[in-house]
Length: 114
Length: 109
Image (tube, rainbow over the protein chains, first blue to last red):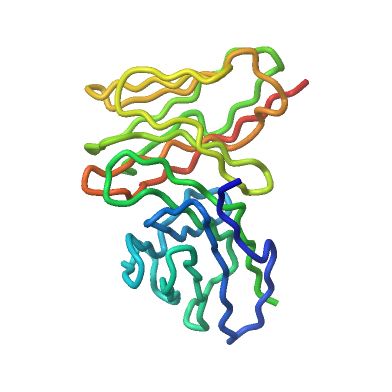
């Protein structure tokens, strides 16, 4: 079955370390997204990519970086510059280039600081 | 003022009750989505609406573009419906979604 796989489900990071969250999809979607969710708050867009080798900053991109070398993969790196990285991170994908397409979500990664 | 607001923020119901969750927005949209987020965090897409009404099983979603309002109805609610329900807006300019805080629904047996 097609879908989005995020790994790991839980991730712990020491202060000052970079950490990379994986997101893979086999839906043949062009567009991929990374969201951050804090307790009791809505999802906020970190980065998104409409096509391979291209990506744009979302609303809270500071302290994060992404790459889109393959259509199937959109890894997110949480750098040491992100001062409050503890959150729930969700990856999503959709058909790009057209309006009104549903986004498919992964199961998320919970990141915590040790 | 947030671009999208949901009400109520928290809702507790007894099994079998009819449930309505409301979503109001203040900007132009190309579509409105209804998502269900389970306690583990995973999100399922329930509906995408640009006009009228859609039904899937016990779930019904409606949208009134002129009034900038959408509702999600759950008939014969069940404890497994307990989740956070979110109504993100799809911008007219592309595929980005704008999220509100969601409605926490708890259905007691």
